[in-house]
Image 1: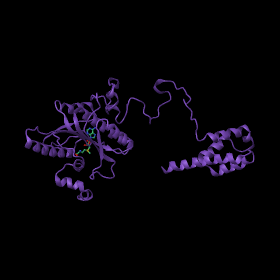
Image 2: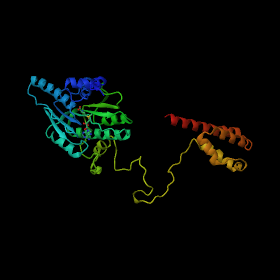
Image 3: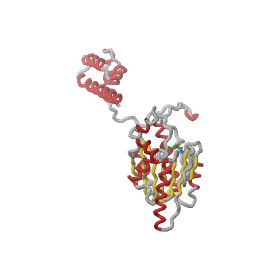
Length: 358
Ligand SMILES: C[S@@+](CC[C@H](N)C(=O)[O-])C[C@H]1O[C@@H](n2cnc3c(N)ncnc32)[C@H](O)[C@@H]1O
């Protein structure tokens, strides 16, 4: 591949180098700002998942501009920026750097310690896992990063502060917006033009932080580490909000896993369904099949219940028409009965076709 081919393919990659940004991601934050004005009045910020550091560069520039403007009006405190990433980052002037996993409680505590007597105006998180291509897994890990970022934000963000985070616009994303609305009255989803269309990434911009009354930030989130969480310590509004934002209670069995019948050392015992379906669509076919059995029809034909069910299940036209001919000669009023069975076979066949198309 030629030395300039990536420059030709990606305008933002090229522009980032021209303008001195460490990564093309800088444009995403700049474009989010031109849409949502996230830097207004900001002097303290946290950059989660910050390496190689282009968002920190943007923060440093914007917060310094704010500082200069504030100084013109009177005394002002200098900007504070704390940046965190799993990876080491080259130093950046004016940026405190921490290396650690934001889903780990000790990293979260280190960040919070930096805001001992103060609060942040803005928390941003551009965290992304190394995608595996297993979408459910990638979305789950992304959700964990978002959950960890939100939890850290609840400890350090001032009331009225702003939270910006990368999300994957996948299944149930509207549920995610709804959950964020518990903490922020303004939740906006944005996709900057520098974010590739082929990527499902987008960004939530959450403004005017206002946690529910009685909410107390806590560390009892289901972190990705194996540290045990005793959720029973949480009461009232604290019990339900942060721990359930994206992934639920991880101590329960996973609904997508097959477990042995003798699970958790309990001997398996079969139980009937608590409530059988009251009007299933196959009811009529079963009734007619029973009636046929009562009239001893099965003795006179080559068909038994299993044959009929299989024909209906697979929408087997030739078998159904053979069955029809046989049955017509043995049951009064059979034409009516059979068209019902035929219809249900037709419906079944259509359903199968829809499944394949889907
Ligand atoms: C898209 S990059 C961030 C780019 C950055 N915003 C910039 O402008 O330079 C995503 C980053 O998330 C970091 N990351 C992923 N999982 C993390 C975790 N659990 N804790 C901390 N950082 C994480 C990765 O190391 C990676 O540097």
